[in-house]
Image (cartoon, rainbow, N blue to C red; front, side, top):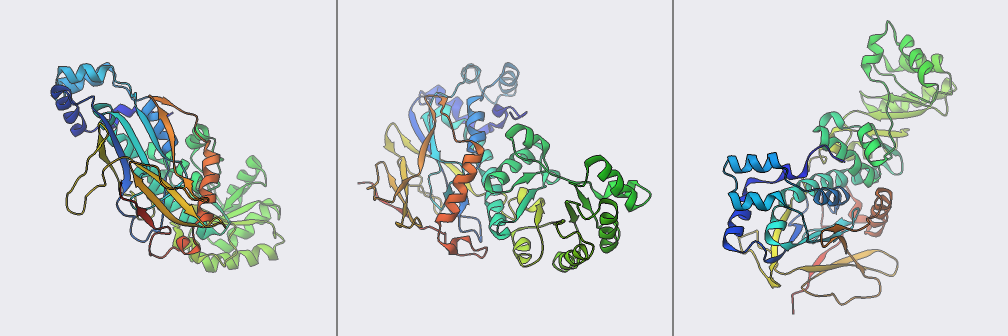
Length: 428
């Protein structure tokens, strides 16, 4: 579980609304809030729902302890009535939405939180913080997986993120198809396979490169990866094979013109008899750099900064909007930020071959289902109690199947229309 208490992710303005609603008697009005994105980040053709599994746990554990309530009262954030309400807070409503690993598009109602106004509105920052971050990482990671064309990806971005965000990012990258993470906390918390090797500091620690390699091989055996670019890459490869023999599992290269170096390194390894030794490359790789290496003899990619920061899109622009009060649709009419009232249901429409053709969204109703339609929403929390969710590996497979289902144009790294068009059917 996260070391960060979820109640600390409440925003000041949420508690302002809670206090006022408790005073005027509207706090318990039955409401529905929806999470959606008005548009995809520039250059993206799909979004990936990620973080739902984490979010359900955080909502379940969402509490205000005595010290937090006292702080809020002392600083004037809440009055006595609201402080008492916060002291006994438990979410008792419902949460429904798209499965983790599902694709989404502009307007997709990926999460619906329903219950009393106060108990729902106090979750806004928590919901958006988790889903915006994890979905951004997962979308970037999914694009890298596509660019890698079946080659292994290792998530290595912990040093470029907040300590808790690093663990969440490792989970989101694994969901998207990365095979390993270097983050041991993520490995322990979520069962993600871990991998890593020594850094340049270990080579520099020793009097020469061979001594450093010999120490690593003596400790870890030949099934390890030696970092060969501290000094001269060609000589580093020779030293690595001289020390470990042609059975060395892999070398890693972290600098230089990777396309040229990968070719030269493969030729050199083969000439030394190390035909099975793999080549791992790293160093500020994003989906475009990975795609550019598609024709080169690279076996694995290590991605760090780009994946944990969403590769230029650190948020997917999700918003949390009130759409229904006591069964009545409500709408926001602000210019360029208008909402569609009423709780919505969505289906993904497919050809008989399985290719997705359209997403249909129906406010306040059940869509007219066709034979190859797939209903997108499912229950996560019912009357405050979480339901059993798919495992992380099951969600990972779900995303893989979703990416197979979209038209091939939707997998392009270049900008363009969303991979699947969205149609909103007006309420009757």
